Image (cartoon, rainbow, N blue to C red):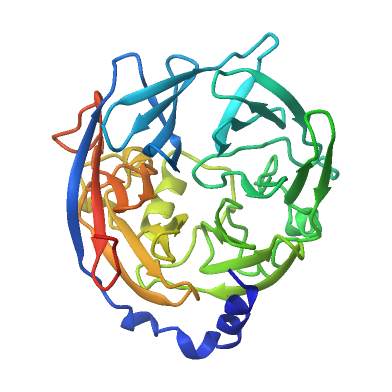
Length: 384
């Protein structure tokens, strides 16, 4: 994908976006529903689910929280096809795992804390460990989860450390020059090069008050698109040029504003503010249809639900998906009904957008299955 597409869309920013009250509500179709049985000993970690293609079909990889392992599930035969054992200690030890990304048919990249990148094969054998050192010494966190999976460009690996300790007491001046994105060039098992890109957070990010630093990002050709949870804007970063190409505002009419951090949380007060304002969640690129999905939780009135604030925060009753074209223009958005989806448990496949309907707040919740509706939106092109 050429960067000129993004640059042209940035120039046309004020002319291309619909007004807040003109966002089209697009219809969905449930193409089909699938169920994959899982063993009682397999407790899926929904913070990281990766879809991948191979010559033999489509698969998803999920970490098992009960047994330290990765499970590879087939979307064609609807069963588990492989278990990849993991070790915390010893020659193949990866310590405290914090997500993974499958890079190729023989390489899985593991994120761990303290910040380390481990390269293992599909037998669970480790062949390299690389320390990720933060030059500012302000962050000690590394992840490769659904929000911020590792992103690749040949031998280059991109990661991000957007979090800082003691967020309630720091000022933006403390972090405004901090570079959160790193590039790791893996020349060989023993030789690598770590570089922190000269990209900082937007200077006006906290102009209206201190907000969470959580972000989601997705891969698109030479570009990485970064979508903060508490900002309408999306940052566009070039992998090749290692710089910020621009920022584009993509605003939903179902978010009332953003929760401002003032004091340390007391009880459920801050949770309620979060629910009543709404926030953005994952940003996913659909490589098969060349579009983007920006998930978000709309503002809600908590008294309308017979659930505790903490329960709603963990599994938000409402989910909206904003569909964007390849130039980041809004095609439309769709509101899913109460407790339709299970938080974070969705991914893109050849047939459409897979959304888990196994929400713990539903009467038909079943911990012994992975259940997905394959969603298709009106106006998009599908292979069949």
